[in-house]
Length: 306
Length: 306
Image (spheres, each protein chain N blue to C red):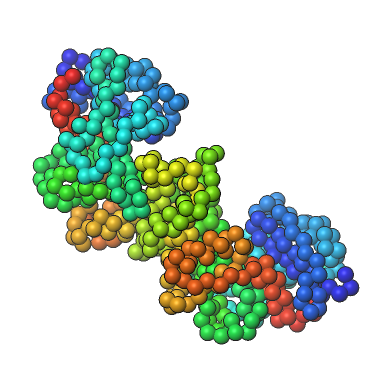
């Protein structure tokens, strides 16, 4: 690994993705594993890093930059949230160095800011946003909206290259707990249905009164209006549709302002349908690429040397 | 039990409440048990009725009137939902008689109608509403709003004594699944807090963007803005506050139109606080009394004879 400059790690709650990165910023090797901090025993992150991540990429002596939930109370060390607005320089200044690891290891701080109902927080998406901004200088001018679909979807307002504020929408986790633990759960006959997803988008309406709209995933079934096997797809459409209807307005989106959806392709397809139904223009970008770009950008901010 | 005219049973998903009722409509004996249809084995309702309910009230030979989920697919026999608008006479015409039980046994049908996001349904609350209307002739004139707090809260628009339409709001079940299965769950240090409930009411705002507001029950804790032990009370305030802000408008409530909250005293206190914060006038009524009044009213409709 003579050419590698550093080890870049996106370390979330569920999964870990790591790259060795060349001096030109290009990825050399990639490794991923289900080693998210939510799956590790308390204090297990340091050991996992030394005994699994470094060996997997033959990166024993490389300096490393880690982003995501690894900086939370569940992770290696807790790195305080920095307040918005923030940009790459802010995040680089807030990097927390882990002592005693030989080659330097830094953790990227998360961000906090005023959300729709109190202080909101993120860990990991800030690095993706910084990466998305770094990929094209034009994105660092004017107002932008970035959406990260997921368990806790993040919607960020970007102003001239800075993360000005953001909101978290619990769409993914609501789907998960309702489809597994509530009266809305589907039995073993559940089947994916485009038609049911579209019906859910329609049922989402303007996104208001969500707790009332949700029950329709049950009442349509017991009243004979919808097959029970469709309830999951309908619920997915209803929740994503409500998010698409509400989240841009929370950030003061102009009517014709596009939404940059940064994430995985499956969710991007669903979000595109929901956002376009809500009259929004959509652009999609790889979440993995944004993570790597962000870690590269922060590496450059700290001078690219160790 | 020489004086008893019939056996009245409010048979829900979780619990069963039963009364022997005199010819003047007054309750003679009351019995309740955790024998809701959701707790019975398939086909277990008939056996429970014969072997537990009738003996408990020494009501072996009385005609009986049963309302609630006992008329669902989980119950004794499925009684089809009747369409709104509906009144006591409509429900009485739709009573389903169970054959082969000796003394007559009738089950009250549920109702269906157009809700905010598709056909909505209720079973049991229609009987409480009919009872609430029967308790005072003045309630059967003009427009009224009745709210039944609970796992699946029901909000009904009454027009001249008829149930015109209604919406179900999943507030109780959302609280249950989120506080037990999601990142919003509180640990063993959870404590009830009036201050946190009030903060949740404030965070509910106009009830819009609920899936975004919900995450504040977590982000306020990890950002140090709220003690973790308060998350449950805050979540309760947020969900009930969002319901109070949205549900009356779904029924086209006039600004000064009072809401009749029919239910148990603990939830009534919370709903009163939320609704008054939302600028609504509130009147409270016993849910148990309404059930008995409704079964009495339907008994009178069928002639009070068996």
